[in-house]
Image (cartoon, rainbow, N blue to C red; front, side, top):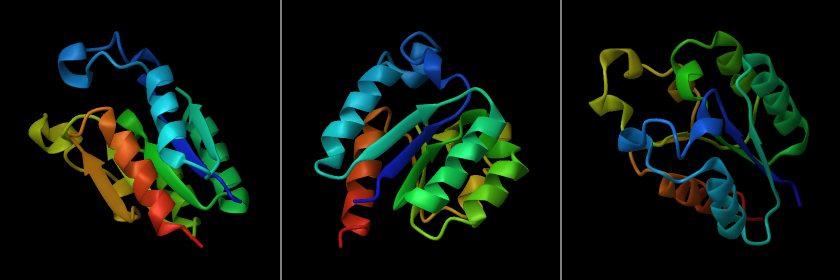
Length: 143
């Protein structure tokens, strides 16, 4: 069974400590546990990097080996052409996820490049959005 790739961008390794008034106190490790539980029998590959090129490499792996992608590109959402181009090559469903509601934040956060290729976008559900995204992909990719 092909895995769902769950990819996390810059600064998300600091969840639980970083701006808790915006992102809450849930850690990335707790989110990973939540994702494993939500996936049920579907395997996942859960990754985080502060480096754009590493995210692109994992998207390439997903192209070859994955069934779906949940991606929280964080700050790279708004400027990364390489991530956009890599995601364009993926033929399965892509869910773009943001912990905060990017549309209630400063203008710089309103225009995600990733949204142009995403099957769906989740924003503002907090860390629980990951569970919703994984469950949705499990349903979308059931064979």
